[in-house]
Image 1 (tube, rainbow, N blue to C red):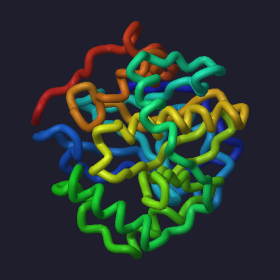
Image 2: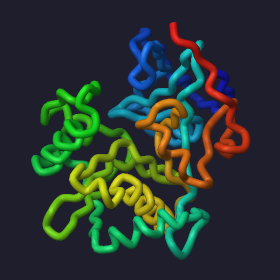
Image 3: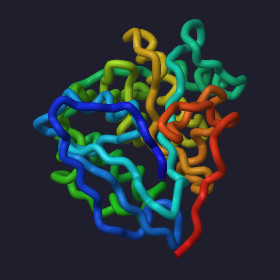
Image 4: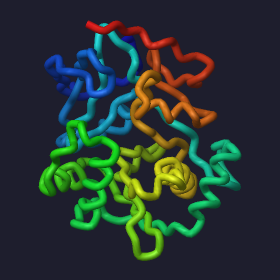
Length: 255
């Protein structure tokens, strides 16, 4: 994947290339990542994020699969129903109306048993065969609490009931949604999209420009929903480009 950019650090940042492993998203594919432990260099995070890297615990990573360009970092503008650059569709407005009673609280990134129970329920319903399905509480707590940068939990409730949770990184130019989960029994009111729209409002209220949504993969049903945002941008060929106008077709073949 050709993602040249102009990032330069005064002190070299050690990068590692992971061993080839089965792709988590496209059957029959092999993935590799460029990764770096930034626990001692947290100031590097935001520039790396703006160049298509994602964070997990102390590590940042980016796919570098030589035979595949399917994974493309994606972001949308911040904004809400009245302000900002984010354009809402009629469907988005209906989702916000359906969930207008949902309350939100921003919390420290600390694991709780209540959150973990919902996390397990979500994984069993949505990703029962995924790599995270067997995570215990300690592994979950490590995912939530290990971060070298400013990270919070955004908690949503339907009355007393826990509705959903998002692990969110606070960056200089936006918020990055690291991982989200919600009550699968609430799927009829589109909780995932609602929480993204609400985080766009949070970003706007904080004076930030973007919401980073992770990787968009056109041919993966679990990842291609992000293309439904009208102003989505993807990081390709070293710059952010409008998804529908300038994104090349994924270039990959099964090996």
